[in-house]
Image 1 (spheres, rainbow, N blue to C red):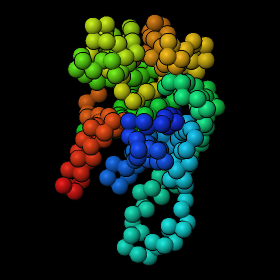
Image 2 (cartoon, rainbow, N blue to C red):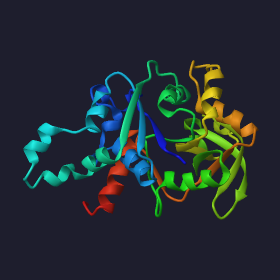
Image 3 (cartoon, rainbow, N blue to C red):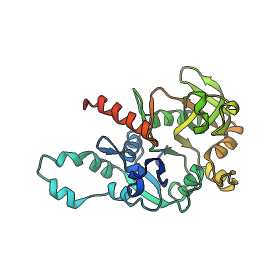
Length: 276
């Protein structure tokens, strides 16, 4: 039922300068694998094979990565290094990649709207590669698709944060409807509120299942005071109609959009894989 996953990947990655001056932030590696590849593999594990990527200027490395590399393959063929390409070659073989450019950086809502020609009129997943999520059982998008199949509405991933961090996230308010699955009916949401104005400490993280009407809502939205189109504003309209659920997942999220989270993710996976 969820056949496509959208990856907004047009941001400049300014928090990682100078590394991102010439390298897309989505291509920064955690161990020996780019961040974006972790997201694509998560989508594949959830049964999604169509990857729709919203890029921008200076992002050609993304397209090159998810393509055949005949020169490298010929160089390592028959050597001990041949196995290094196995994972990415399997991803390329199993997936279909389509691309569109976001011409202006005008917020996450604008980036998702830019992906409309790639998605069409169907529900879809969204993965923000900056958020690397590790779950003890099924991956996060798989869990959210299961919720979507039951309720047929938009689903957000959320986690509890410290109140002093609310100005970094979209924050929801809601009524819990399933204690065993930590599922909330969203009643309100605010983009990056100060802690005194935050409706809760439940923050939206980079995983979404969205219904196709979100494109019509985004298209009609007026930009905020910063000139950006926010996905939270569009989701709030859906929420007021009772059409948004929030899932507090069991797992660990690493914010790889900043250096501290990036290092934490690297150390976590290095230990998990027995490297350190």
